[in-house]
Amino acid sequence: MSGETGPEPTPSQTIGPFFHDALLERDLSELVSPDHPGAIRIEGAVCDGAGDPVPDAMVEVWQADAAGSYGSEEFSGFGRSGTDDEGRFSFTTVKPGPVPGPEGIPQAPHANVLIFARGLLRQVVTRLYFPDEEEANAADPVLASIEDAELRETLVARRVGDALRFDVRLQGEGQTAFFEFE
Image 1: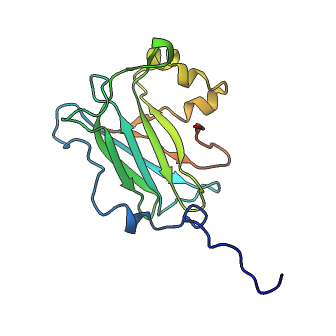
Image 2 (image 1 turned 60 degrees about the vertical axis):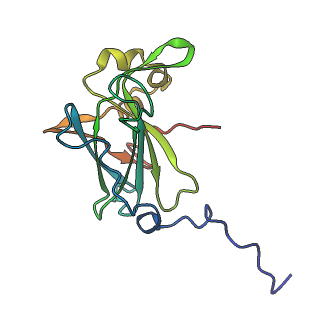
Image 3 (image 1 turned 180 degrees about the vertical axis):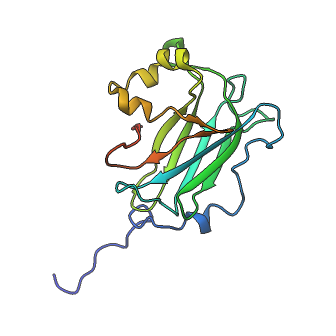
């Protein structure tokens, strides 16, 4: 049928570099003040399949507090950071405590990480684990569910100077492990 156009695209079909304008009006990258006792800095970059930086992505974290509790009055556990021209993001937070997992098995300290970026119809979901928690990481049921050791390692941050480094590769060689949720 000539001359007809299809339905208007939905926002998820036209996802584009609008995160900075629409969702990043306030800086939510400091979950705690840098001078907070136990404050840590997490830095990283979001890269595409070719290894190029994604300058207009948005990274969200949701994590427990140091005692392993979610969403207390003192600590919301939620943060949001846009990426700069080099795809870099950062958060100032506290190291979360272990939380109960499936069937009561404790999960290693971790932060849930969501990435929104151009070309993604939906956000991608991953986790950040801590390098100084080798024993807890080895016993973590979610981390252990990833059979490929190299892929598992993409979820463990590395210490670089005074910060933890957590890079996200959206696809291709060295792709970060992502999780599906129904």
